Each structure stands twice: as C-alpha cells, then as structure tokens.
Length: 168
Image (tube, rainbow, N blue to C red; front, side, top):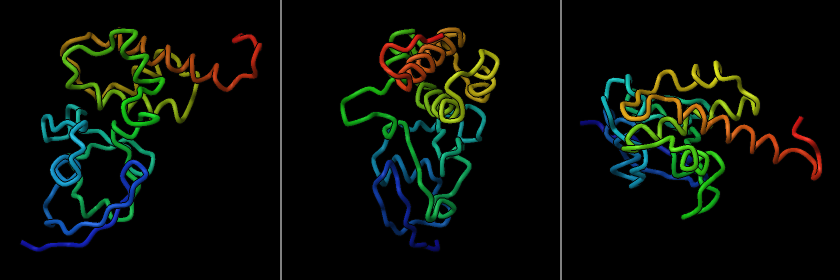
C-alpha cells in the first residue's frame, strides 16, 4: 500500500506523519494522534459523530482521507476546550442543559454548534436546528441540545458586551 507524507495542524499543534493513502481522517485522529473524542459512528457520513472543523468548516472525518487534509487546520472536540481539563462555554452549556446523555453524538453536536456560533452569536432556533440537522442523536430528542446552544450563544454574546451593558 502506498504511503504519503502529510503535515497538518490539529488543535493548534503541527503534526507530520507518513500515512497509507486510504487511511481516513477519523482513523488518523483516533489511532495516530490518540484524539479519541472524535467518534467513528456509521462510517458513511450519515450520523455526524466524526465531525471536525477543517479550516473552520464542519466536515465528516470518516469521508475524508488523511492525505486530503494535507496542510489543513483541523479542530477536534478536544480543541474546543480553553485548556486541558477545562470546559468551554459551549461544553458547559451542554452539561447545564442536559444536552448529552449517552454522549456518542456529543462531539459532532459540539463541532456543529461551534461552526454555527463562529458564524453568528445570535442564532434563531431554526438556525440552530439547521446547524445540527445532520447529526443524529438517539437519546435526547434534540430539545436539550438546542437549548444548550441557545444558552451558549447568549453567554458568548454577553461576553462581547461591555460590563454593565444590558443584554437587550
């Protein structure tokens, strides 16, 4: 099997590796970099559990070969935390609103929500549902996930206001 040299940046750290041409990005992240927060679900691009940000855009890492990510900046769910062992606003909101149960879909949901909140800090419920629409969850019924994203948006929007400013 042919091997290829790749260099990519994952969660702000540069990685160089020699990989098989057919190695998927999800397998590279999990097996080579030991970033197991990205889940391998259906392996057909349907469930969204393997979602990562590739140059800021949410993608299904089971549908991309690692060699296709050459030179890219990848953000996994581990990269959403402000520091190891800490929770970001979005992650904390998921905990608070019970937006996770079994946790299998959670990394993909967080990535979809992160992509949305990078585009807008005031998404409507319809925009939130659209953003997570490609991610399957069998436990929560989505209500708590939508609420968690709304809470995070509110908090992140508030973080950009001057102290004492009314949230309007």
